[in-house]
Length: 359
Image (cartoon, one colour):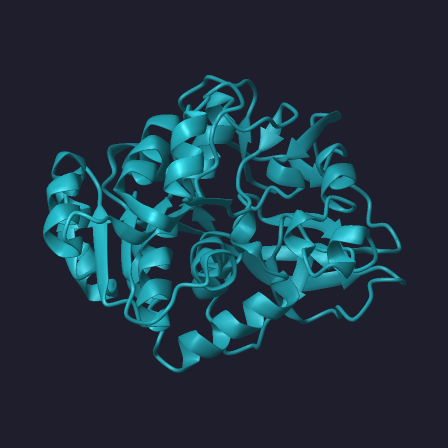
């Protein structure tokens, strides 16, 4: 089969090659025929080493498809199910899961990430985040394959697998945005757009989108942003809209320390700074002890939206069905696997919110 391979970190392009195989199906595994995979900024971060991944690896972690084979102990997942791939599924038994923090569970994620999902010319190849959805098929633990209704299109189901769950969940679960509040969103890619939509659904009165891309600033109004500004104009917008107090909630959706600092400075005293972007291990952000004490701002990291995917996927599907969550408009390009590098270039340039690879 075909897949997109990354041999070493730091390479700007992936290789689309034939001849891949999957690992053998275990009793608790399913084989998923991937039909669509989103291209996310985290894919770039894995390619350049910001996000660690065993190498070589098949790119992609945001996919959807059909179960074509299931092991004897594959839980409730059945052959023929349409599924969204979840890269960090809850086990349901660990301390995190029992506290309702399934997004922090690593009982399945760590062993899966450390095991090769593919073979190529007799050599082992890993999957990004233990998955590797930019391949025609992948074998996964059954918990990584979350069934969705058959009427959910593959591209919609793929986006729910990571970016939408992360962004909307950060609003509902991590921040608990209140009606009538003021919100700013730094970074308007797929995750940032999902935050904007979540804030709209939550009833925020002002939603300011902050992004250097003029193209993206023109798009955000359709998703619920009340204003869009370049980063240099964000402070002026904050002063105008909040009487210089600062926003109630500021979401950083890129994963850079300088933008976390900007988010903090745009937040009112007692407000919330929500860290949604996945950044580098050595990119440190600095605060003084005095400002942390005096400002009393809540700094809230949001890992995978802060919720249990078994509940969150279902909620997002309901919102999509009700027309409250516009996922189709988030897809700004649909490309075949052979054009994955074009999709990556679109992402680097800031021209795309989400590109979907159709397999």
